[in-house]
Length: 277
Image (tube, rainbow, N blue to C red):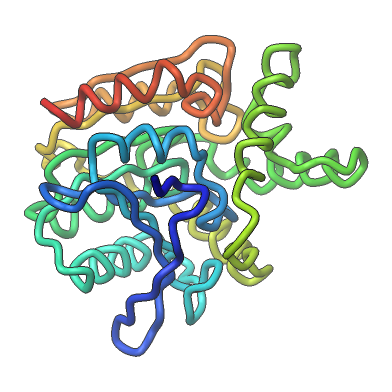
């Protein structure tokens, strides 16, 4: 049976720009579209999350403009990222989707719901907060510190950004990276320096932006995070849930930005139950 480890990479062209994507699960019904995190490409989705959701849903993940194997250059603002995501979804032939956004992908998912509310049935927003959330201006310093530690220790910076630096967090990080390494063929292109810097600018600008009126998003929303997120403070996820009129909040213990990966055994059933309602 095809899994996230071996599902092929495909391409859809939108206005002359190729977008790389992968899909998994039985087609039919409302698909779940995944929008990934800062510097991530298709290979950075946790296979346990993807296989778990695909066990009951058709799922689609793609590299947005300028990311990984997709063409063009990453825009410097969240609005255009949302516009691009809408264009890809429609180019794939869908007029109703569930949207799963992690980190900056969660911010882009909010843009999708604000720009095209008729397109979104349900939202799953993880490791993310509302635009205009305080403290996001610190992101370049947090990321820079993590990259310095990663360089000094020859580790992936997500060891320091996604997981607590205690025994449980270190074990979760090791397991997470082992799962990401399961795919050995048809790997995606790594993100470029331009793309990473453009994403960082968009994230920082989003933090300084005036808050959006999220009360207009009526789609049922599941918000999840760890209780010690260094990148998007956990209280921002709680604030996000309060601003959304039809939301449920889950905060996982002893975990950070990658809380849904660390607690994937608990999170996948929660997400499946939410998407099935």
